[in-house]
Length: 104
Image 1 (cartoon, rainbow, N blue to C red):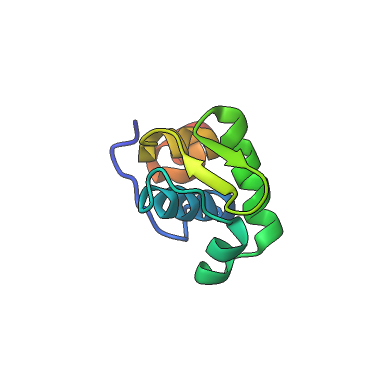
Image 2 (tube, rainbow, N blue to C red):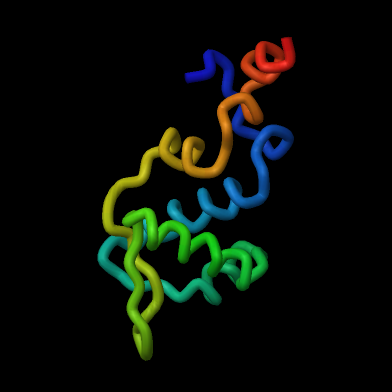
């Protein structure tokens, strides 16, 4: 793990940011199915992009989906920040120290 991780937009990519928003929003409503459209509207995130991320999380086993009225996505387990980082980013892209080491 990187000794210095600056969790800011300058080091994180949009996919990570949007994925973090999705996970954290689903964590706020455990057991409930939430519509991606509503989450996207609430956080002003492109719906189609958030839907793709939700599908990736579903394949990873972090969330499940249900179709129809009252459907959407719900979180299956507590996803840690370190898991999100490993899922989306290569450590050398987000950590200034490992980025320098990779170049040398």
